[in-house]
Image (cartoon, one colour):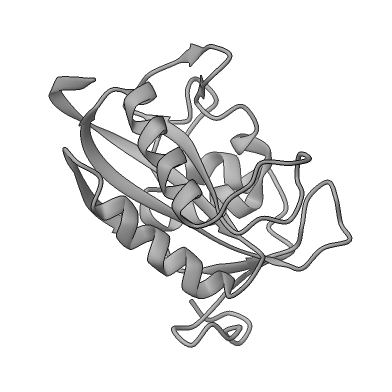
Amino acid sequence: MRQEVAERAFIGIGANLGEPASTVRRAIAAIASVPDTELIASSSLYRTTPVGFLEQPDFVNAVAEVETYLDPVAFLDQLLLIEAQFGRVRGARNAPRTLDLDLLLHGNRQMSSPQLTLPHPRMAERAFVLVPLAEIAPDAAVGTLGTAAHLLRRISDRGVNCLNEAGDLLPSGAG
């Protein structure tokens, strides 16, 4: 459903099957084409080690910032359509995937339903979310937990490495 006022929203993007760097870049372009939505920024791409199920390829992750007139559930529906266009099949939690789009934040909304929880319930513990989020919006408030930059200082960012435009790891200390 369309809202009268646009809200800032952040989307976590990840992939580890096929050509994940290319997939993440194409997913950002797809997010930019969502109706009633404008892409404001996207982070660098990061190669990240898997969480949970470890016997799988590394992920490529990023975060996109948008302004959208869509309410959170309508926006999530658009993200799920994009995932389906990229061949996403939902299986076991933390399993390999062609594309994963998580609605992390939508304005200052705090909500919990079977379909959607905002802020995303595990984002404050995940460096693969906080590193790219803090890159583009260090002052983004994660509910009542603090800002992205504050939360990032509380966890290890080991296993999260910035990629260059070609999809190669940047030298230590770069990017």
